[in-house]
Length: 340
Figure (cartoon, rainbow, N blue to C red):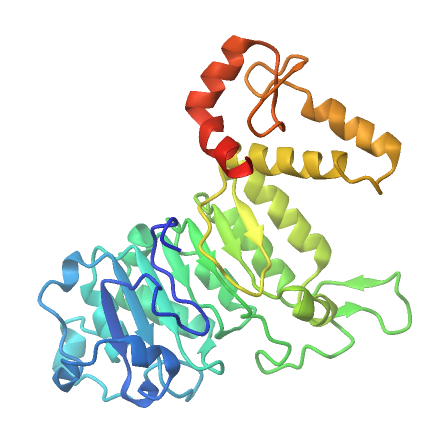
């Protein structure tokens, strides 16, 4: 988390998480675990907006109980004069309106908070600047309605989108268990689009800067996800799309750790590690091991046939001493020490 160097809130929260510049906790959310890690020394100020809010880059907003499908419905609303001044109708909207430089927004809440198209549209109407400034949007562990994915496409500057475990089979007015979704109950050959397919495609097509999309749903939950809510084919399609347009990635993990964004060097290191693992597996098929060894014995600098092996980690091959020395200073030094 420290190496990633970006705001991160674990689930459950941990003391070493990196906090946002501004943390706001609704009164109804004071008993939630995350609230216990927030400094509430000035909580008597209510919804007073800090004087430096226009300069704040990151915000964590912990919502209270669910009512009418959106955050803040139990909080005191602004009066007519405040609404006319553009301060919004809820504490969340008032703060977002004032945060004109906001780059990271982390919306937290109990697991029944809903992110609906109306909710996103309210944010856009009250704080249109977020369409230009927002780079990281995290709504993980809330319920995101399928149609809300289309609304999220308005945040064109977003580079990272956290939708961890946000897709629900009971989302919206229609049940997602109906036969009209997924495969027809009488034939596995007849496929119908699942509720979140279209929205996920739109996100990949409409967000030109998107580098990372976190969906959550590790191995324990993926069967339910793919059976009722999202197609495996669409996940694969979006993963390929993100990689092609920005070198980005789509993750599906139970623990949403803030790994650094994908880079060519990082991908090459992961590929090399996978090849070496296959090559050293004595139970693997001999032909496959030979093919992996041939791939490994390629100089990472010039891509020529490599015959000289690093004497430190004994895992990297080079075609010449010049390539080895150059790569050691630029890339391989840290990796070599870790492997050694």
